[in-house]
Length: 542
Image (cartoon, rainbow, N blue to C red):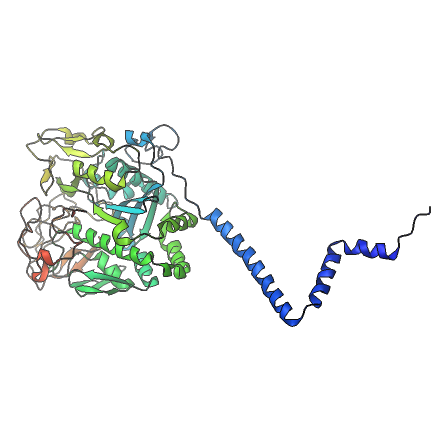
């Protein structure tokens, strides 16, 4: 079969029309450029390639850095919480949650975990981030807050929830414990936190080192030593404004008192909470500076090794992007949950002050459309006949429902006493024992009948026992004996100390320390304390 033969010019045109032909023409064109034209052309090529890469990375980050979806606290099945979590007293979602969410408002439960103290939840904060208003509000929840539960003894404490519910399986302990704690915080505040962030205290020191130190005003000369194996804690800081490194920062946030109790917070553990709040604010101020972007790699490493959360790294970067431009002094506020003393048999606790708590919640913490009401909370309230009721729910400990004497639920340091009925006493969830095995009470060597606010034991040299554990915002008396006594670790664990020097003021009358006209440690008057350290326990006006 014969056909028309292809001519040479047509064959060349066909070849030049394909990719190989285009590339050949391009090479011939480049070869015809002079030296200067070639340099400009290569530069243009490089810029085009870099632009494509930058656009690709940016699009990838936009897809990866995204805000999380707000979870349904009901689990998508009705409005009952508590299912599937061991030993958690179920709670219905408050009515306010059904009013809907304000757009751009996210809530978090931030938990500080002291690994040296058995992993107990040493610090708990409810945090609300309004991404539209660019404000952050944090409320410290005292670990000795008394909760509505069917448990007895120290099981009524808020910081017992995590350890009592985490179970024995290491793979599920975190989820079980935090899920129960989030729900309990929801009962106390009406706000079930959307997400959780559990930070090991060691991360604070590493973070401070990574950002190059933090300037902070140390309120007292701090001298504390605990050589206990596994603890090896030594805190030695001078009073005054200074730059703190990581180790010093760790000492600052863990300190409660000096070795001999001659120096301590005038408002007990509340003072330590206020110090932690002020220090976290100082750290946040450093982290909001633009140059922090140069340290993102080291910060990410610290985060991955010391933080447990249900947020992805992309979620956190998205939140960080929204926080750009915030002023730490104006836009970040910390408060402590308004509370009053409550003495449970053999256990020291505090109660929320409902009216004051509602005012705090509805001014910065409420993520819902409607206002939070008392009926949205499940807070224990002492009635005039001495019995207890719950603001919005069922009283789970029936022993508290019986009338016993007169009492007051007003704030201002008044004590709400609970009937001292015979009952089984549970150990403190962090492993410490509130009382000796025989159930007798312990009196410190000075005979004051008052124990440190963390509930730890102070054993006198003669072995005598008896006394009462005070609420966490009372000062801690020193031992008057020359021997060693068991002192509470500033981080919440048990340790040894001595009482050789210093003289402690007389313990205050029941109902809280009387600091009116009093002096702080080393002759420092209340007016000389830092603004953020408030000995009265009453939050300063905004």
